Length: 236
Image (cartoon, rainbow, N blue to C red; front, side, top):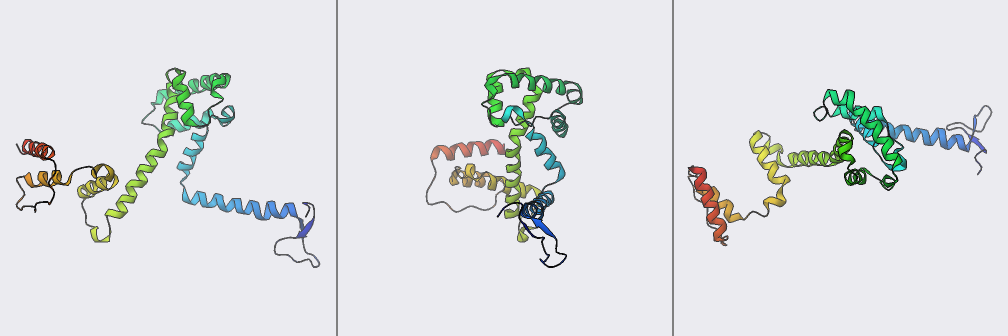
């Protein structure tokens, strides 16, 4: 099969009047481009335009290939998206000047050639004190680095919410929901808390009218005594 060989166009026959195309046209225009359009359409449906623009702007900080994707205008747009972290004066007058000096400086420094991601770029900036010389640029890098962590935290919170607030608990109040979500999300930390300490603290509150049954295994006396002291202080 040669790229210049001809075959009938998609949906056409070899009969009279049938349109013939090359293999290159078939695979590029009838398969590859169509598939690419479908992928782009699916991505646009799944991600909001603002989120997509945020990723485009962050990509301009990529240090690979001597900062080949660097774009000053998009990085200014990135700063505008974080209006709480940059003042209007910094965005309008200071940031562009720092970006111009930063890109000229790091491209002339061979030590930045080994940087392949934002993490290594941030480390190299700290090692060379450029985070002090270009504080606004370093702030952009910091915001780009914490974005995956913040996104993951939000996803964990929504996952916990779908587990806790079910159809049987649809009347759960906001306070109780918040407390339950904290316990679910930070369950590794709460798993280290001794059960006896929780029981003694709960039972020591004066508004409790009932008595909890004793546990078969009693926790350490120091832990229980400390919990009782904290409870007494809270009651007083």
